[in-house]
Image (cartoon, rainbow, N blue to C red; front, side, top):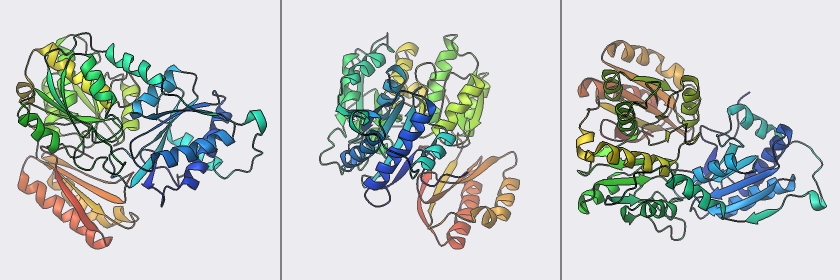
Length: 458
């Protein structure tokens, strides 16, 4: 059974158009009915990012939950992983986040976490959709859920993060770009608690219309330039809900998710702590990254794009780290989902433990030329048949020389074409041919091109 509303990462769309308060209310109903059926505590914890539509949608979904007997604790603006932490450590059967992550400010989204702190699997999302319009008798009187605003649980999350860095960060100068998003308060706070000197940018959410607009993890050039400008050792860029992070070395070069995992895995191996010697990446992970791991006796296991699929593969392989180029990185012994603040601290630990400057670690390997083209389309239907012949040709030409991956976006009306090759000319020729075929055949247009050789994935 397919899902009508849920994509790769929850329900997402333009707030008050595709994602309306009415839909949020119905999602609350469906989630409450699913929760009751599972026998988990009828308690939910909810947070949001800094978007203007956040309070509206949080109120609507909370009302839906409460109308089916689920009590809701609203912790306000907080990073997504805060809800994951509280769901798995508190008496909550459900975690709810109102956020569209890296999407622009007019968008918003809703995603759910289970009692274990993990994002709900596909089958649970299907059950929630089925429950959205089910005919039931709603509770009355004291059986109605109660909604409480209470942010006291956030301190426990900060203490959890602080305990992960026994080396402390004294003397380390960093630039932090919070994308005017959910991490704008907590991220600099935890860095300063640990002794770092922090220069903040992108930490003024204003009227809720500037999230992800000028910087953050999807526009890392902002933090890259600021790191050089301020003479910092390291730059940190979070996305809108702070569940992912990318970085800059001291020379302003981008450290994306692949390179972050390479840094961490190699240091763990040197410390005798990488058991098993496996890293989980995705089909988008660069071959240069994979070659570096293999040369050091580490296996790269590729999952589908989407951090919940990475999490599933981590469980299957027993890996101690996994993630995506975009900066979603999971450390399963610490948390079951991506956490940008945690990724930030674990990466800073590598600098401390290795005693090497970021610019030196960056030069440990070079990426293969990799290009991503995003094609905006009205409908994704029929793209596989349309590209079948061209894909077969591309795969034949790339045998032993690279890879091609075409996939529809799970969060936006786009099809993404990625080509990686040992030669830039071959890469660009094949990527352009595939993109042109999609534009012509699906009446679309090229939304953007990203050279993933030196940039981050989406």
